[in-house]
Length: 303
Length: 327
Image 1 (cartoon, rainbow over the protein chains, first blue to last red):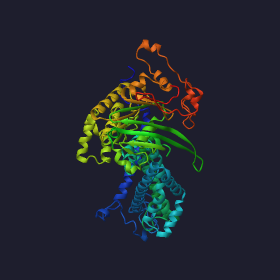
Image 2: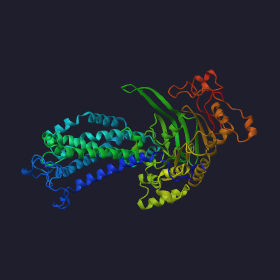
Image 3: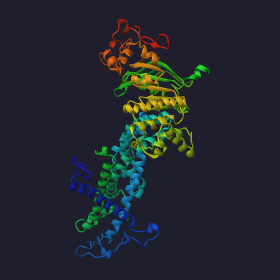
């Protein structure tokens, strides 16, 4: 009667849609896991096994006899160099594996730094209101409107290029987006009765901010953080491509792409493979971010 | 401090709470919302004071002032002998454990990310009234007092029903054994059957623990049932204040009469003969309240003098005070 006997839950989606939906979760997850494995196991020097690893060559060792070799699956390629070599005879495959380390670690470090700063300032701004809020929000406006490239150049001049210069350049402005978003959420939560209750009890500002407001914005925070993975990898690649980031010979995906730019007509593979990696990770990051957002906090659709 | 002072939990004197309306770039003040406009009342130990009135009449604001969630514009709030109306937050801190609050919305008043036990134990932690080992026992005891199973401590609020959530709220209010509990419409968001349970719980606790309540509600029948004294508020002012039975037997203010006439009588014969006083018009804006008696534009007994001056609360005997020149 009334079709209650049907056991299967009604999801409102056709079989095809559900399969596509689950693929948008499974494929990006696999991509991410592979990239993380690559970054970790390119070489096991960090756990005391410098001779073991996925990378067949030292990414920086040059070999003049083997320069500009095409990938091994193309005519003229050597089986020793799976993705070919660059103009100094360095193995592209090894360089891409090592580059994953730089690209992923920069984006993770930057995301952690900016999320912590942005969350603290955002909650403070939203909860305290008044002058504190006005001040933090004006600084946020400045950070959001300041040209990131200019800042990167200034830092490049001031402290020289390097890994930490990139991290710094991306962190100095990156917290502002978090602060904006978290402030909005905090404003909403500040008005709830349980915050008023905490005030009645006499809880300190710090306690209210981190025991009562923070747990209620964690979902949104996680969503923005995952969506930022792709953004930060792109930003790091862009800086390195422009020569403002990681310097030669250290490989990062952006700098390998930049390296191959001058040989693009003769040796497309130098730029193409790190470029594909950037694309894959950014896309995987965005798909995962979307999925997490839909699971945790569908109100954030517009982000 | 003499004996009578000691017996007073709260004395509110000439309390005013104005919220400024600002406009423009410079945030000039253009007007005030007179949410609470010069009211006075007092609550004795172990007594329940009811505040009734339509929504927007300032009863919640009054409660929040007594809790010092707002700093009053003027007037004094003497809480257990200390004027807390202008005290900086740092100094109020030590009186905070003597106040509790029960809120209207059993959903919004519990942090959805905290366990029930964490919520109830929170006041104890803030005031360092229990160390880690004691905390669990104390919270379990509070759960038992309000009729909840202590095994449910680890659950989060959304796993409870509305009535259970309100019990969690009551347990939290009791945590530091406060001398005053402000109940801000504690039952209006609940089912009728649950309302009775919570009211009975509150009464039972008052008897057992010697509690004092400020009970804010718009449901006259409930307020009559639970309160010892009742104040009727209209547009930020107290219109009439009297002992509960006196107010309901012998209402004097035309506004009180109109409110009481709206209560249905659970007897079909008497209900048929019930005459309702239906007020015309809407409640005026608290930004620009009418001059004189705030109620005069809607009052059936109004005479020209009513718009001249604010009628003072007059003692008409029996602890009955009324702010009307026509009675």
